[in-house]
Length: 345
Image 1: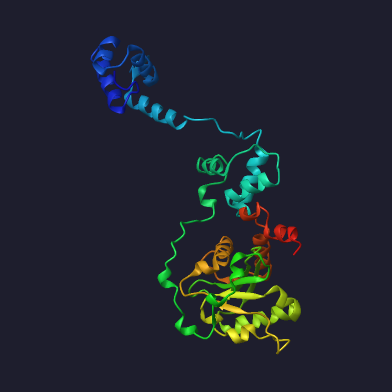
Image 2: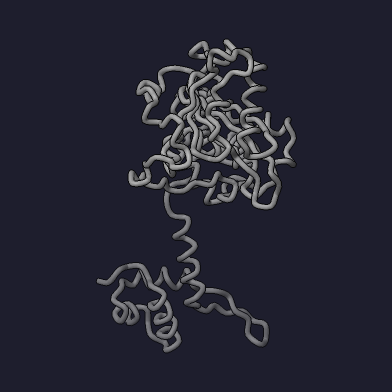
């Protein structure tokens, strides 16, 4: 016997056979199905029609039956774990965190589980599926953070920067820094405005061990602005505290970072350097992986092509605090602030 489910073609065959006056048993023999299947199919596709004298009669329609079949297939599977009435607090919490606070679904689930919030348990995959199925009112896949597959590292690009042959290469950086077991080793980069949208940019620092983020708004992408910002930071921290906090800084070979002597030289103590600067290989952004990942987090708030001059200092401070309070899987969904407090830093 053939597949017991009716295909679209078989539904139209059934409609023709019924119009020809064939009996249910004859139709079952022709289509190779049992008589009960024929009755069920007729029942599913039967609709009421009106004659010209407004009297009703029943008629089997193949397209109606097939549309019902497709709709029923969508509803197959397990029932949803959450209900809009009993789990309204969970739905509201998830929608607020993703849509307005720009968290990822993974971060939301991790935060709920690590903080023992008393909500119905769902895994991150289930949450992604529920969002795709529009179970959360006002929340869609377009509200999720943008992501893409990571590019494979190409070792052929790990060559010396010809325009920066005097700076310290990352190859000279002590190996223990790679292990992320000591606080005070930072990665530095700039996040800049869109083309023809102004010269303002952000000078961003990411601490390798705790992923602590510091963001400063500077007027342009020049070495003078970078050095001026470092001077201002040193005066704010104090020379001794700055040296203890910024033991090393790793950056790329952008023109704004080429004046390594001025970046290392203290503006308070002319004898003792304030930090040590190392340069990545060209086109190897993965050597500043933490910095690059957190630049993407900044872009959740400042989209590419935006004019950074339009964002106030309070806006920048909000983004910095948002990143430092974002739950991270690598820390058991503690934030950078919570992790530093846990380490008593």
